Image (cartoon, rainbow, N blue to C red; front, side, top):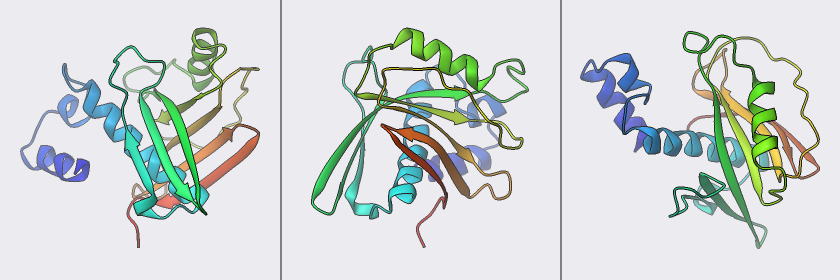
Length: 173
């Protein structure tokens, strides 16, 4: 559904700010898009069947998380509350770093054991090592599109004590 919306925006020659979901009133749509991308990355990282992953959103706008991932694998149901953040394009905020985003979230949500922070890396460049301070969250992950192939998503980080890292195609084969 979100892919069709993106194609419509491009076909209608919408301005870049609208195509990038940065206009007033597009925040929820942008969160939905990022949550769907993160869910796809998690599906690939944990080899979850497509029909076993659900993405939901809390009814309370002021909740500590923006999305809920729920999946079933080998009879076990897992729920992940996700706080979405974004490392914006360098053209919009060149000085913002992923460390700054993590440090702000750690200060804001110091004891959120049931919330994972997922940072959408919305800029190009090579991989870099990131220092993650001690935190009381369910985990911290970075995800985004691969520079080598914009139809490939990467995810790297920790969920609990488990380190994850994967690159997955945007669409299922």
